[in-house]
Image 1 (tube, rainbow, N blue to C red):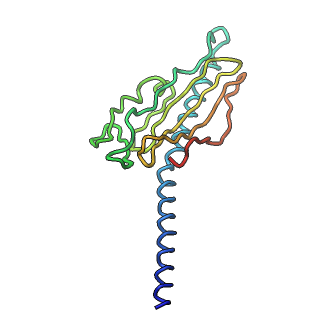
Image 2: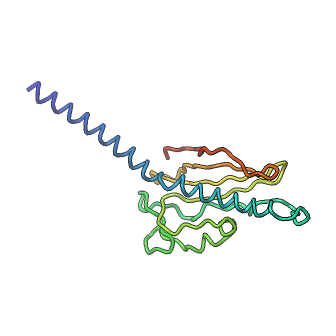
Amino acid sequence: MAQKLLLGMVILILLAIGAWGLAASRRAARFAEVPQNLRHLYEGATVYAQRYLARPVKERIKPNFPLSSTITPESPCCYKGKPSACSPGGKTPTSYNPAEWKKTPFLELGFELKDPHLYRYSFTSFEPGEELRFEVSAHGDADCDGVLSRFYRKGRVSGREVTGPLEIFTENPEE
């Protein structure tokens, strides 16, 4: 009897560990798109700045990045309280018009998503000071409770260089 009880407890512990591992691997799989898409958006801002810096000095009137965006697409990637991929041009409840990527600033930065995705993206430009600064962000809601996580990279133009840390910063990463 004691052996059966012990065996049952061991099985429950293994199931709990397996469930935790499965949840962790699901979070990692959902996050997989973020580094690549942030890199593409960041590179778009870098190319935009480099095109500006390549102009003759007389043509450089007011340095600035395109206007900031809202989170795009506007609707969350959730359906009936569960994560559901946003599909540009698709026919699902979380589909949206792919023309959203043809608007400022995404058009100027050459950024567009054509495949289904679980995160939504934004670009933020800051008023020019000594440096031009920008942030590219991915916003997600892994449990569809309306509280967003944000993963972002920062960049700046200083002199004739576009620089920024390579790391991805986070706010509410478990959301």
